[in-house]
Image (cartoon, rainbow, N blue to C red; front, side, top):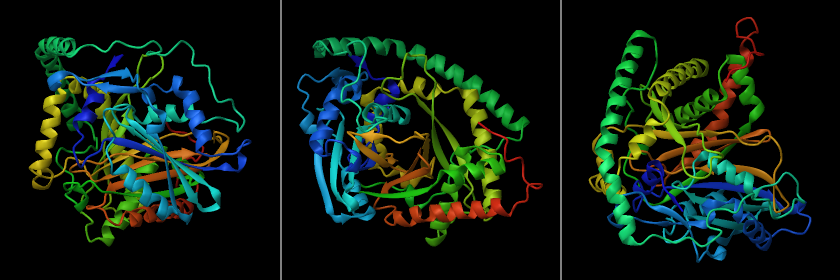
Length: 482
């Protein structure tokens, strides 16, 4: 039994009938390498064997009466794997469009909160006999890094790996847990409220002193950071509907690294520059290109002293500027680099734990109702957006992986959207490629495939600019940056 952190519970509170707070991972595999054949039965046997090392797959929510405190995770005594493992097919021979249309439909449906908060879809009909595995997990249970941990738990380094793994000590819930009564849950929740004024005063004091230091640093140093409410208002920043649209892009990892080394920046800087370049092409085509930068929320992992990350969210977020208004790709990259450096300095001053500490003060009851009020009053349309989009970058494995013997060809993550932020861009590397997943509200971004198609165009611009620079006019290609 484990209580959700305030940050984990906030993803439950953010959820509305149109905003679904789950994340998805789309794995396309080639069954040819599976030694004993590959089908849904093999995947079912694999997941069943790996359940001891997948706590997020076994647990369900137990809410606290009146929502005065965060819910508990408990092992579901009525767990039914067949409820979570589902089968679908696209018209043969299915291509990317057919697959993304199915994924968009899956993404647009909420998870059942009475069950463990995940689904896994076995999708057949793809060209070449390939199969897609679409995993959907609530954000209250995992963040990006925990998602990679789940990837590591389900995938193997060889096609003939054994199904079961040594899970070490018996997981929590190996013996049936006693779920506290409603009265016990309510009493514990009320007791926690007694601490709230003290926590609020402590956090407010920290925030005030940190804010003074940050303002002094911004004034005294040439930091380039996003200002509050400076994000331009775009079509994608309206009130979202329940329907989703999905698109993919894929670019060579070698080109990303070459640009990184040539311009002495980080891989994340290049990812942000690619996103900005693609958005410039896309917004220009819609006659929406603003004259100042977009503001992107960039989730970042927060180190934890716990042995193993477990599940849940250990993240904070930085606000980075994406200079879509800059025509020159090199100037755009360098401007984004300065913004990212400034965002890191500000984030270091505030501390990665700040977001989680403030989330602990938000009772789920009030937080959820505040989000529903925000949505019903359409405040995202009445005021300027705080951010324009979310951009996540998660490093993936550089070696081949196998699922029940089938070789993994590609892995693409997808993140959620919410009122005021109708576009999410999530990036992961695998082998020699970088995979970009786009998920958006269909009502706000109906032509998402055009944005995905602009990613290779943005990369080609940077590659051409890199090739045009002589070694004497660029920084050392061998210098490595973090």
